Length: 496
Ligand code: ZN
Image 1: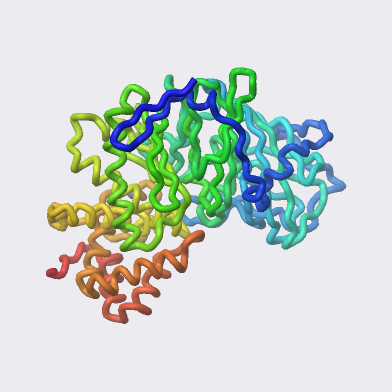
Image 2: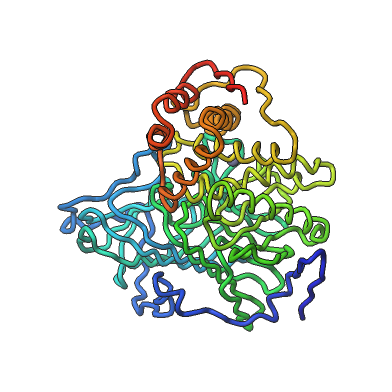
């Protein structure tokens, strides 16, 4: 059975949509990911010992590198690892209430000679680990999952890590606070908020923006539920046992903290595509008719931003609205920003909901396509998204550029607990507005577009931005931005 109601040009498709779907995987799109071999299950059944007392035997003590248990972020030394570069994560996740059972196929290029290497994984029970079909040993301490493949991996070599694990993921505390981060289970279903450190609560990750990768998700849920993840929906398979598997593909590089899965009792709203961009949202079923026209207000925002920032950087766009307290308004998960339902409540003014939607949408360019090189560069995310938000407000005829009360501190030299402080957002946005007023709209938008073109799919630093300002707008403009970034006093905006 299937229902879909027509509402202002939108189809609201209920959760029973799944029952009528069939597999439509296009093999031509699967070539560059590890999923080709997903069915070629290894016959090796040896279960790697997951106790922390398991070390490599003495006769295999490493002669070469053991990789690194950090990617070297000064503010978050626990995040990420060194010695390799993840190409893709292929995550087959069965969700059963609070429990997930996962098979992860991770395609990795060694960048150093490795006898062992680390991923980040918190909690959960690892039951099998293989590297290129051969059983590997593991050791777990804190968020480190150390893997000993039993042979030397050479620089430039690609290998496939195959991990099975299960358990009830638990959100973790993060110095950036206030919310615990990771995979959440709620009465209505599950969702993910990870920025910056929560991804490792649900998959083994090189958990830092510096190692972006492509993602495939095969999410199995009861057939009366919905499962949405980053990217585009390639197929839904009815497994004939009361469960359905939803196949999502994120073909553009994605930072681990932006990877998102949402499952449960949701309505899926499918809008007409915007050009080639698939548009789908998930919202609480009871609110679907009221929310459909509200989330559709992002269409003109997306069109405006494409005109000013350059093409929308991904294949799909949409939001997930969850009836839960996230500790903040929203998080810009790649192609599927997540929002606390409170910001769509009838009590929330439309203008405020629109600001948040414009902000998260701007992050798809600034934060998601172009990600921070280190977390201390966070104003490149939040300042840019705030500028986009204010620009949207300006376009609606309201002047957003009224100075904040009180001084807002500099944007460099942040500590981990201050990552999402007010100055990062507001002074960050004002910094770009000061640049815009100094160089004019034409040069400013050319600069933003060059920024995205140069760094889309990768990371960039504050220094990279200063360099680009110098290159495009000259030394005076560069000095102005530098003052805005570093001066203990927040400067005054130049007059328009
Ligand atoms: Zn933001």
